Image 1 (tube, helix red, strand yellow):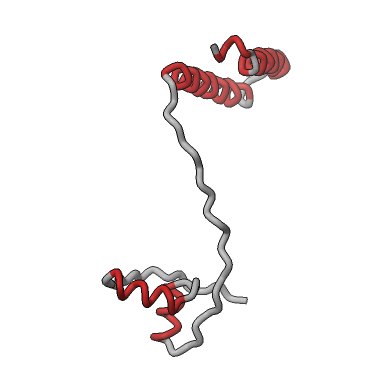
Image 2: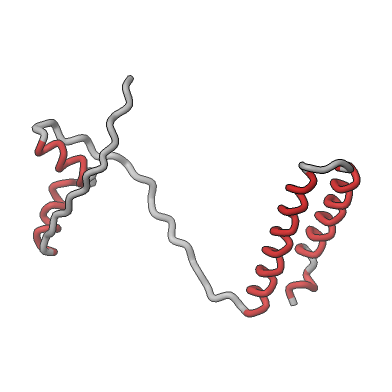
Length: 118
């Protein structure tokens, strides 16, 4: 099956809130762009597609301690990436990987240490 051409032309339509309420009711959950294309190209309007429900994410402000801890972890992650990149280009990988495993164990222990959260 040939690939459909990319839709690169975008046009805007303006509605009053009352007009949009009427359009939305007629769309009945169908895609606005697909319905417009179908109407103007004299094709049947596609059936309504089911969408995944929106997931609400509860956000809260971070404490100064939490922000500092995240900055420190990000710095460690950056250093680990640099070490991993270097490891892939040098000899002595076994020793380097051993040191990285020891560092990983230490980081996991610190991350799970309840005293670090105080």
